[in-house]
Length: 538
Ligand SMILES: Cc1cc2nc3c(=O)[nH]c(=O)nc-3n(C[C@H](O)[C@H](O)[C@H](O)COP(=O)(O)OP(=O)(O)OC[C@H]3O[C@@H](n4cnc5c(N)ncnc54)[C@H](O)[C@@H]3O)c2cc1C
Image (cartoon, rainbow, N blue to C red):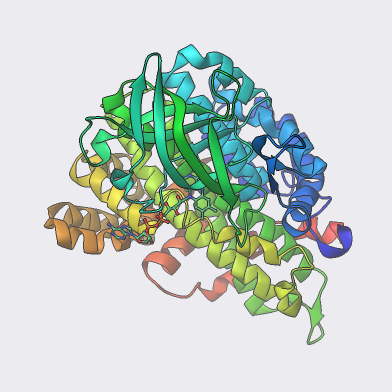
């Protein structure tokens, strides 16, 4: 892999100064886990990095419909390297259920970076989550999921709509101690791999719309050990090839109700909060992989008689990388921290949970923007080689482009965000805990960002519904940007002045819409993050 990647074979944790500063600030137990993360950083930089490239280029999952004796099995065949890495990574889902924290799990997710691999782990985690909180009678299945003996899946989307879950047509009929589900799940990640999926269906007689949906546990095999649903086909995807995504046909399939039927949509949305956080941290993880490749490139390639890293415009691009990376990572860990404090909440939920959900919509949207932008920039910084699939960097942009789409595109995040403002008044806690401290920083940029955020939120909350929807996405991005700046100022309290500079630059670029100022050119603390390590590797 060395001839085609600069990031391969390096330690992705020790090279990531921003991650270490963010974890030290937002995760109280970080010091106890540092050596474990150092080991994990070496592992993801070598075995995982090579395996995901190999799976994407040479060995995607293949669906086998029948065994040699003609029995329908609908199982995927994985490359042995893929299977082994999945086994070794299964443990990353355990910490929150074993007295640990979500910071721990999401640190691993970030370091894995690859969204296909991390998707398998996330959907497995989401089934464990649903069982843990709402169906403890299935704890043996949870144990199998958390030990790597089984995989999970989360199947909600149907062909008539993914965003519009209320349009789900899958039905549920009670049959003694089980339910029987019939319908088509049109985007089913983990198809052919999963042993236990969670899925939405409408019990007979339940009302139309999202409130009539219940959440069910759907095993691959029924009580007689026979195939419980079919996998029609796998999708031909432009990336995330490490996760098989297919179409699942449920035909009177046996399933078990999770919790109370009438609360199914709440469980589903809560479960989505977990995967949206995974999406956000995964997006920043993808951008970081691309950055590691870029750092290798700019410290080696010369043009016009100078190393790339010495040209002002390259330093400007590196500064852009680090400002977005620091802002996205800091706010995502702040959201993870908020979720960690609130995840034991149940419907109808406390303000602490609504706050975590509010932050989740911000980071889901804005980290996906960052990842799409930065991975494209990384390709450009490699010049022509950046466009070639035979090298390591191009794939990261293909991978990044899923992050705005699944788990709800930005319009859906904006609508859900609007709901937290109009129904739960979640913006009030945000104003109090994020915007007021931002104002208190005492810098002109911070004051301006705080003012802009406050005005935008108050305006949104006062608009009639149609106009509020029109403005929701713009406001969401503005609020996310102010929140990233606020998170960076917070980080500066423990990690030093560098983060105050990042905060100012973030505001200047994303809220005031001005170019980064040219004092950055002579400040390697901003543009030069990670360059020393890249130089010593070259
Ligand atoms: C690789 C991959 C794997 C996936 N895996 C899974 C999985 O395992 N489980 C699962 O359940 N789903 C999965 N999905 C589906 C994914 O979550 C959906 O594609 C996504 O939620 C969008 O739904 P949709 O495709 O039906 O688009 P639509 O809902 O048709 O939306 C199309 C566009 O319209 C916008 N839109 C929709 N409604 C509104 C509105 N009211 N106002 C403004 N804009 C609106 C959306 O933002 C979007 O941009 C997967 C998708 C992909 C690509």
